[in-house]
Image (cartoon, rainbow, N blue to C red; front, side):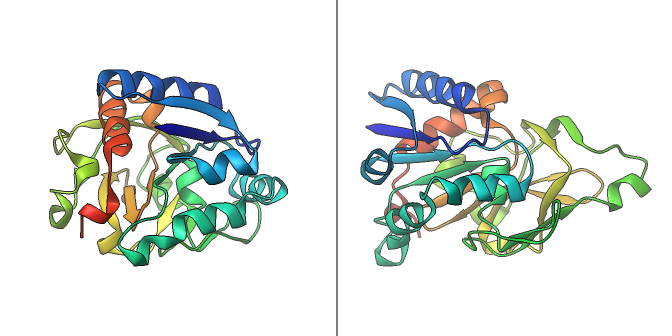
Length: 225
């Protein structure tokens, strides 16, 4: 299995790659994990991971500057044909880029892979909570998706590690596998076809993150309706 962590100047690449290597070893899978922005490497990968740190607009510009956006859209777009596209995982801002738009430092179009818009969590401050949201938070599974293979071996209420001030608003329940609560519901895991994303940092979430990454490496989207 060839896993490519996409280099688009989005940050956090090395730690994400190392977490994937550990998850593969823990799951008993043979995998090579590379950090690359080479279009051929991205197009031929068996799994794609898009980490993210920083502002939505800057990360989207970085993705477009590399010329990788159309490649990502192409290799993951076969989801309508039985989920045959390349499995994709966006982490933190990488997940946010999957949305229709983002409002961090201006209005920016997203990839449009999941419903909703990324907006600042202004309401939480009125409840006495601080931004950014930093630290461990419980993950609550959407019961309609409790059997999803990405959640295999995970238990409702386990913790993920979050660092963010913006979140996906207006997400569809059908695309939201799990949420967290920080003064308002926060989509924590989303999936549509062969494309998935986590708002929490799986590479910083210890056993929970490694289990989730192992599930992602084993994931065969066409096997799950």
